[in-house]
Length: 426
Image (tube, rainbow, N blue to C red; front, top):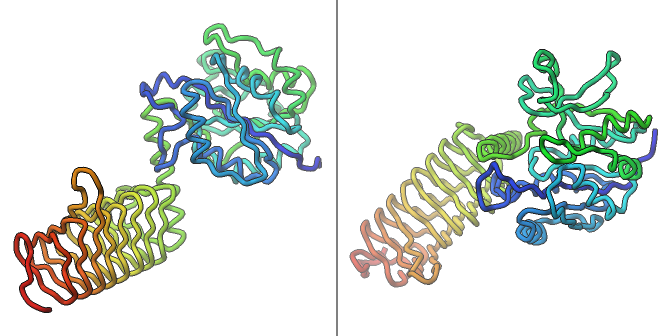
């Protein structure tokens, strides 16, 4: 068995994304709140042997580089580099552009538009690559409907001979060929550099395909094989908005399954949408039609939903109940507080044991600024109250139904009216 050696990861992200028909770069479209290129980058960074990542950029280069420099966090051992593929001449050409900058003896090639690949699969493929002393390994999988994916061609002993594009396979043979190429490889850098110039341009697409490397490696007598991925969804790439929706749903299901294993109950996972960084505590119940955006943290024993939108920066402490046509953004609700009916809570800190009545609205925006509101412990906010920020409802205070609160409400005071005025002590 060959000992593991250092790896350089080459991530292909230079494509023009013509089928997306959007101005945003394909690899920057969000999947569960995170740019899709960040998923394969995070996955490969978990391999302990990776010491360098090279991202091949081209179309919309500046925005891709900016996004990765600002949003990608890598272990200190990994060096991040960029190379530019000025003309998009195919995957083999992209690797050829990147290879001179690679500092490792072995390379792993990933697609920047394949967000579902996992670190676990890459680790197993790497083990196979070294254990079998291979010069190249292709990650593949089996599909019931291979569509237009390149097919793995084997001989009668199951040895991998080459990868052939679907259009180049006679119609009767296509249905029997279910194993497809994922576009991901582990390769010996020196031998890859040696054969790249032998790859001929595909005349129909006017591009150089890296898939041809398998046949050339065999001609040279190099040891090349495949690693079959158990989960076929890991190879899915994004080329259209329809495919983006597909991988987004798969990623959402993965996240939900993870949190269910951690003790969170989702009454209807099919109607629940969470973000890549959503955090839940144990014994929380999430009811149907819940949409959670980035940077939301939910504590233990909470009740969330149905029909609620939790936006950026929401924190729910333990034993909080929220739901039924409520929107919450940039707010914290502390333990044993409730906002169980329709309303809007924005830029507010809600204390412990607060009851927020139906129809409560925090008027946090004055046309220029998002202003802050505080509702202290034990306060009671009556139905249809409007709190005009900045304002503070102090400890154990109460607003009567229909109040419009424009000034701070002192402790244990009951206010009512438009604008709200002191009615009595609570």
